Length: 347
Image (cartoon, rainbow, N blue to C red; front, side, top):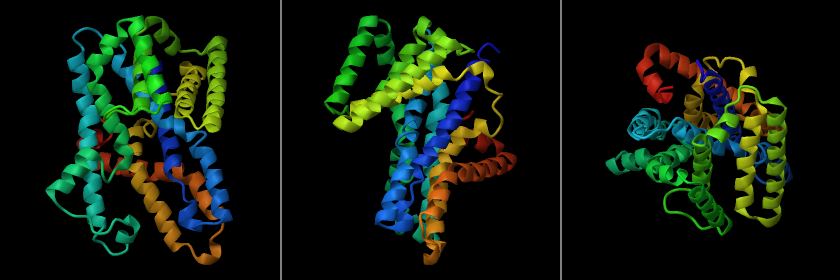
């Protein structure tokens, strides 16, 4: 039970980040209003949520994943860590990508649904299946899991880097330079590597870890978290003024860290069933968002096309998708509990 406050806090954070991801993909200005002043205004309002708040979601996922992977890491534990990630990351990644492909391929052949899908008739072939399963062709939000798999495979290299303060300093300095100069790494996203490895380094440093895992935030934690959030706001403005990606990367990094320090683990209620289904929610949300937005746009009469309805739909989208996803999870858990557990990342 010693880890309960931390695990419970991670569950709540993962759930909240999943809701933010839904807002990122719920933009509907052009779909409902086309182009023009109303569409531009709606797009700006929606961007206030998606860009200012929602953009911390995926960095937060990377940081949580990196922290958990390197927490309690000892010599000889790599094989066990990898084995658990096969069940919690790799297998769900493959299965979800395949299910998305099957769903899209089937829907593309059904009158009415094919217009919603908007991809024409999707080919059924081995090459298409391979592209769908390995490269998330029909499940674009799983770029995150694809990157996470690559980062997990880098664990032996990161372990060596984390052994020395100097090697960590050089490593993170190089990453920041690459981001500042907009130099891409092969396969792995540089910003994802920074989020993941920085959190992993924190987990492997006893002093930093003790701060991250305090059940009570205390005055120092809240002040430190507030300061980090203020720095994040400054970095965001720097990114806007200079158009430098590194400013936005640091903004997200400081924002996630600041929010983590401000929220006391001991004050959070026990995460309920709905909160613990955040992986399932993340995996299903994109299809539901597209279905809801496209169906509503097709059915809405021209006389009612104003900024109000799409804005209300946008604001309520996380809760609509949460309701649909939860209902689907409950039904699936009742009739196929084993499959349901796999699709929830064995959580």
